Length: 115
Length: 113
Image (spheres, helix red, strand yellow):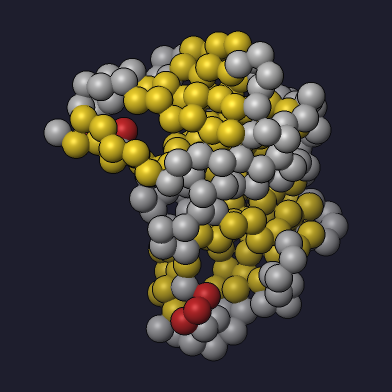
């Protein structure tokens, strides 16, 4: 089946620094990937749609200059949290739709803690 | 995108059958109904998908009435390891890879010994 690998699984960074999270489709090509954020005891909130070779589409209220998305190849999308602050601490999850009519597959998530 | 409504939480005991119902009154003709399971600190995992009537796989059954305005996920003989959040979503059938999934609140199922 389709597998999405997300790295790192957890990261701790200092306020003001930037953190990059990678999302890879291991056995299929994904022209589109999705990035979600999830706060404790809440549902997944869609942040943006990552499009291979073009600009990402951000959901309303999500700062595109803070959450930089790059989808340079058909198997890799990256989310960079720039100038991170403690309020950016959250669980970030990526997703991609598998080949043909395969369902959506999610990465294992990245726990970001900003101190 | 169709909005879904499901109970915030449910409690059960090991060995019982659990039924979680989801309402999706505005479901479109080309929408599928999909259920995902999420454990703490993990990404959601696909459980089952259906369009109408009944679908069954090795882990669950999905019942969809004729009007498709609701669906029920049935988990037979739950165990402690089934404690998780269950999300019901609707998504277009042939919309391609660009259709985004919008998650509702989900149902936290707590299975007691």
